[in-house]
Length: 78
Image (tube, rainbow, N blue to C red; front, side, top):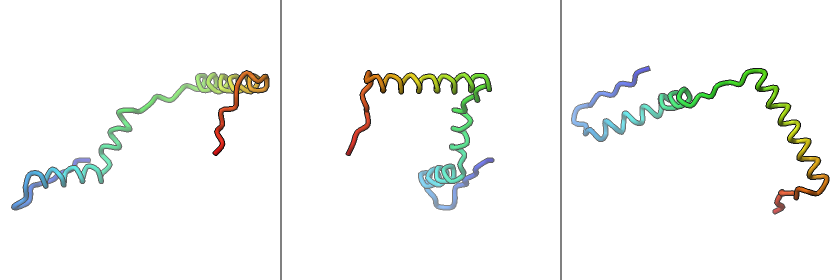
């Protein structure tokens, strides 16, 4: 998708640039470009399973430490 801005009669170069930047913002070109640039790879199913199992193990360990009193409750009450 190309964005075209032509200088109108008796228009300053600053106003042309301003119209161009507004057009780019409205068109969503920058958002799409950033999504493509910073796209993250999806994890394989094996890696997702390993990560889920690790999360479960860490949660169990955390709960165990909390019950034993080795961790303090970090919630803040207002």
